[in-house]
Amino acid sequence: MQTRYFQFAHLRNLFAPRKPRNPLLRVVLGLLGLAILAVLVVAGVVVGAAMILIGLAWKLLAARKARKAAGNVMDGEYRVVRKPALPGTH
Image 1 (cartoon, one colour):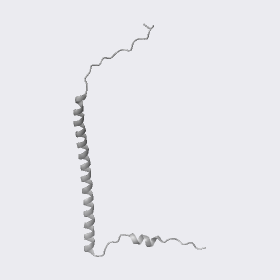
Image 2 (cartoon, helix red, strand yellow):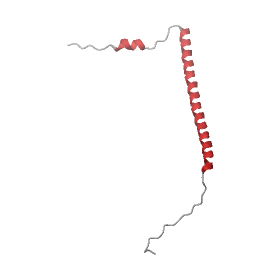
Image 3 (cartoon, one colour):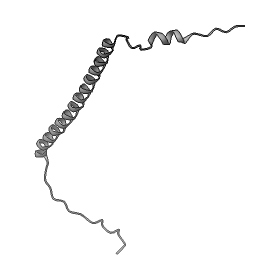
Image 4 (cartoon, one colour):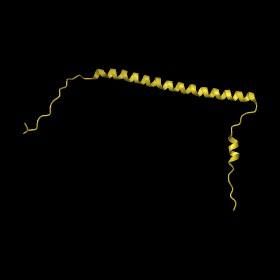
């Protein structure tokens, strides 16, 4: 009985990245890759900075609302009252 195996070599070669032979095309594709990488890095930095700025603005607005709500606080005096002694113990 003979067993047949799926040949992965054909599938692997289908998706294998190949460098172009033309040196000018190699340089152009290399620069294109660097440009894409730079765009992704800049986009990540912009998104991160926006998240930090939004978080700071959120905290400032929450603090402003807390100060407005502080006008509704009622002042009072407090006094500590000792626990009364149990009856029969002096």
